Image 1 (cartoon, helix red, strand yellow):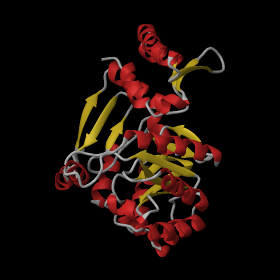
Image 2 (cartoon, rainbow, N blue to C red):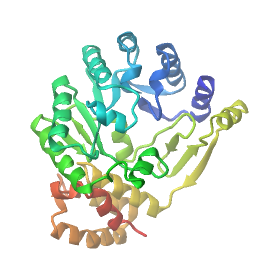
Image 3 (cartoon, rainbow, N blue to C red):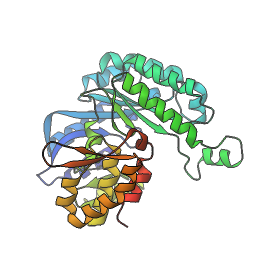
Image 4 (cartoon, helix red, strand yellow):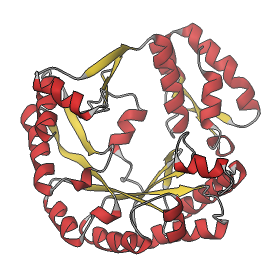
Length: 346
């Protein structure tokens, strides 16, 4: 698999790509040895131009981050850790079927913060039976460890999962949207109090600790995805690799890319810009909409946005010069995805 990843890096290079961020994610890359991670990073540097001081992130579960592993990673080019804490409470972790314990989470963070300045953790809210007090305790624990970035998401129920089955059988209470909203409001208030900036609906960072990698997705920049199921985007086309590992390896062995490509229409690109723009503090630029999609689409956007502006879910913000930006209000943030869908071109 590692050789196939290296081969795909070579096949995808075109000489013009400048790499700003490298992200090991989409699974559990922390099971790789530090030597294997280093080998893949070397392959990126050998084949691409990489900016100085590039953000290099590794996703990890607490149970994969032993003290020794953290020390080894600290000596590698990895300069940012994304740790899947989810909750600091044992019953929540069991409910979410996580492999790690709350003690492993605390031990991991205690060590990681000694060696890494740039750490983000994941936390889940809206878990059935999670009181507001318990959610506050989760946040306080994160603040006490001094992590400069938190990604936090509402619990969602996917079809054909154990959780969906338990809810259907009445063993577990269904997800309560009102509870999730209460937790979301607590999250926004408490992170703001601690000096975090909610730069994207689910992402909260201290100044200078925003995720550069994720920002590139939200701001519509190009990216290259390597490995089974990985997605790539070049500004007008999206491609995705086959998800089957053995098929992926077989195709790469033939020196071919194991991917399919979709050419995005103007409608696709506009709808994606609306979806990502409304989730961020940068919003939707009227100037960009007119430049990239035309005056008629801008007129339609303004018309469709009016009811949301009147209901104080969206607001207009004047940017330096002549540009106007459409952003979600505090009240509208939790509803951003639904609002976006109403602004789509169908």
